[in-house]
Structures are given as structure tokens and as C-alpha cells.
Length: 360
Image (tube, rainbow, N blue to C red):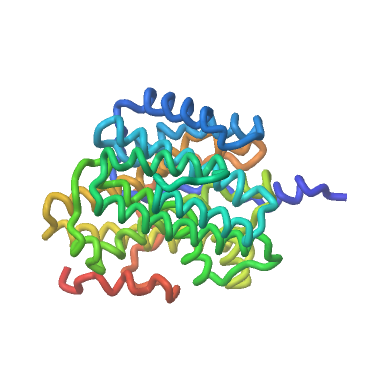
């Protein structure tokens, strides 16, 4: 008889290299950044399980933040790293690997949102995650303008709504459609608050009319999506082993297109690379007419995509000793598997390609 762990190993897939034309960069304060963040996280007691706390302590939040935001002063950068610690703890301890229902998660995320909206309001019985977010929201006011605080608040609303949607599918025996999954995961991955912090950490401001430009909104969503898809590509083996979790782009595509995981992997990589090519072309188009603030924001989006991969390539969180080895070429490749500028047949994101200037 084949045991469950052996079945999960059979479902594992080989590692794949990533295409990302954005050059790497890293903030020089990475070590002190990580030390401060881990010490703060342990003080917050975000998790009562000692094993989980140890897992979080080696997540290298300093490396993630220093690679995705290699700019700015140490203080706001540390604030961002603390946000990462809370979101990772929430994802592991409450969303992915617990028995919390979507109803209970909706209640908890509503309390979290109230703490972000009104951090000075008197609160009774904050959970550790809500209490930590309340403190971070108060600290944010030291570095952010009222407009930036508003943007972060709205970004948290996007994120928490995605968590509830994700939780409803984790308790469902089936899988969502590809279109629903793409929308769900770009929200639940936690990228909305992360990109909202780019201008705060960088110490610059982007005008509202620039943020509302459809091309800039597309670039922002593309960033959320690429990070979420990249996460699915490198974390699927870990998720299968630890939690038997198949809420993943590869498995959703298997269902959608009635194919096996290895064929789905090839298709997902091609989809991902086509979106990366779109980001590069659209970013070049926007940068041609951008002022300094918008330029730094768009470049910050690209750096987040690259830095996230640089961090994940060495993070112990995603290593699976019994899983497949990395490909001989490592994590990187020079050319995309698909460089077409035709929209992907996914209705929820097809509008991104409409933002390209045909002349460009």
C-alpha cells in the first residue's frame, strides 16, 4: 500500500528556472533588518506553537524586505519587514494550515481592518495579529502622509477580502476556475499592502492621477500576479508535503484544461513568462513620460518581482529535502518561454494588454 507521504512525493514537480530581466539589488542593512524584525516578531507572540515560531524565525524577513525594497532609510524598511512577519504568520497559522472557517476568518479580518482604520480606538480582546497590526498602523504615521496611509488602508482591505475568499476554497473539496483563482490569489498573496508601501519606504510620493492611470493600475496588478504565480511555482512541493494543499495555479490549470501536472507546469511557465514580458514592455512605455515619483514607483514594482525571487531562491522556508533538485541552470534563464504580446485567455486580466500603445 502506498502511504500518503509517498503519494505526495509522486505529485511533486521538478524545479524550473525563472525569466526576470530586472537586475538584482539588495539593501546593505539586511542583517540588522532581519535581527530587529525577528526579535520584534517573537515579542508579539503571533503564534503559540513553538515549532511554527521557529519556522517563522528562519523566514529571513530581512532578506525579503532588503531584496524587494533595496532603498530608503532603515526605520521605514524595518516597518515593512514587520508587516511581512505579521502577514506570513497570519498566512501560516490562520489561513493555510488551520481549521479556521471562512466565517471565523471574516470576523477576525474585520477586526484587523478596524484596527487599521482606527488604530487609536479602544479595543477589547485584540488577537495577537490584530494587536500587532494596530501597533504597525500607528508607527506608519511617522513615515507616511495621510494619502499614503489611506492607500495602505485600502490595500489592506483588498488583502483581507482575498483571505476570506481563499479560506472558502480551502474548505471546499473542489478547486476554483482559473479566472477566479487568478483574481483570488493576486489579492490573498498580500501584495496590495506591500506595493502600497513602496513610496513610504522610498520616501517619495505619487500623485493620485498617476496611481489611477489604467497603465499604472495594470502594472500594479501584474506585480501582484507575478509574485503570486512565482510563489506557486516554487512552493507547490512544500505545500503538498506539509499540508496536502493543492490550491495552486498548476493544479487549477490541471482541472481547467484536463491535463496532468507536468504538462500544466509547462503551460504555467509560458503564461508567467508572457506576463513578465508584458510588464517589461508596459513599464518602458510608462517610464518614457513619468515624473520622478512615478518613475521610482514603477521601478519599485519591478524590483519587488525580482527581489522576491532572489529571496525565495535561498529561503529555508521553501526547501524540500525529499523533493526534486534544482535544474542545472539554476533559478534563472535568459529568454522567456513565451514572448507573445497577445492577451492570455483569462478574462479577469486580459485588459492589461489593452494598455500597450500599439506604436510602442
